[in-house]
Image 1: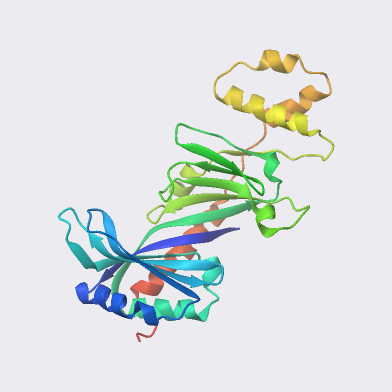
Image 2 (image 1 turned 135 degrees about the horizontal axis):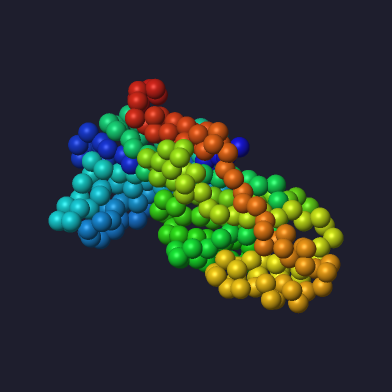
Length: 276
């Protein structure tokens, strides 16, 4: 099943006093570590940014949107967090209750949908397009596609390496989704990730060559002559890599993630929690 790794909500307070109250009382909220930044007045930015640390994760709170005229609107804010890492902390819920008590409207801006594939990272290949692409090799291979913090951004990485579990074949695909997307929209933006099942006997150089030829073919190059130069044993393995099937996101997994992300909007938009 899919899960939600990061949620960003737009906050609308009933007048400037809501944001001012949060700014005045933020230092009293319990957390492991508190950081605060005040930005210069500039259009399209936040006047105040707060970071509440909870264990290995944190919650970001932005207050005071600065419009084109450089006016600071303390009636606007945002909150961003990873529910998988903070939802078990009672202090996080205390913060949410404070925000909910003065918030009049919450909108789901975006969230990260995470889907785990039971295959090793080296057996998965992310297809590139015209968007910005980058990769990092550190504790496994991590690939990025698209604009960070924007709907459509893709991250593919070695989840087993992150968990520190040797011998586990687990790759995570993350897609940043707009809060307005339907199930059909999520599936339309789902990245093309080819997954190849290794039999454990294939040499690394064969897998690497298969990856290289698959990417060349995807870019429009004729690679058949190169494949024909391979031996009879290597050729079928290379073709398996080149023709590997794509990882599909089940419709119910997409629907589940949308429901989970939307639920966080409801927490701050309704009176389901007692105002304090």
